[in-house]
Image 1 (spheres, rainbow, N blue to C red):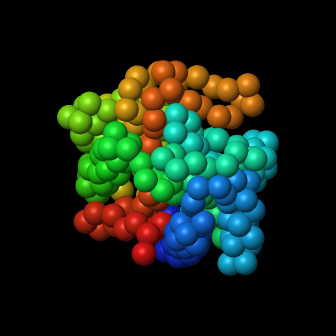
Image 2 (cartoon, one colour):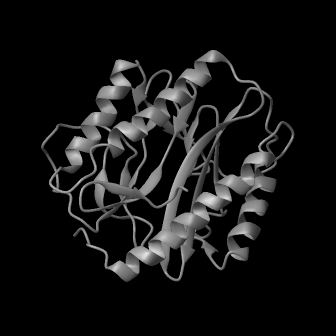
Length: 248
């Protein structure tokens, strides 16, 4: 069941989203060659707690960290550890925070130092695909309209669409209905209504979209080791469109 959030719930979701956005901004200067993903995780946890929130991912279904830190061919759920970032890497930070029982969720892919043109292309067009999907968010449209817009954009730029991973509703639970695939047909799926809160999150690859799950049972990588990018915002459906909750 897809819930319609009350004005008070949206107020709390907006604050949770703001904390997630501020955490991204806080971490950006630290994303440099030599820092470990564990250090980024420690910084994120301290910052989130300093804002009166708690890390949503820490302990979620047994996940052991605050951040998901996915580097290069890692698509999602990379576990922070001793790995040091290198010049030329790309890293996705997936950040979730819970404020007074409500969650914010946003992932963003960042360059470490100077990256090659292929990775720049991947990042540019994955971010663009996010906004193509968001452009479909308004009352009366359907989930399939979002999914189709992302897929068609990705296909236009020859990027692989990971079909096993998708966006979702957000509220007092980190993952709620509806499921929001990054592929699909226009005019299908649930109808969007004012007050729905959705996490839209294209995960695209430079090569094959096929995936493998590592032995840690969390980290998901591209099967062909091609780089992957991931951009995500949480939004609320408004009278005539959407408001980004995890942005400025």
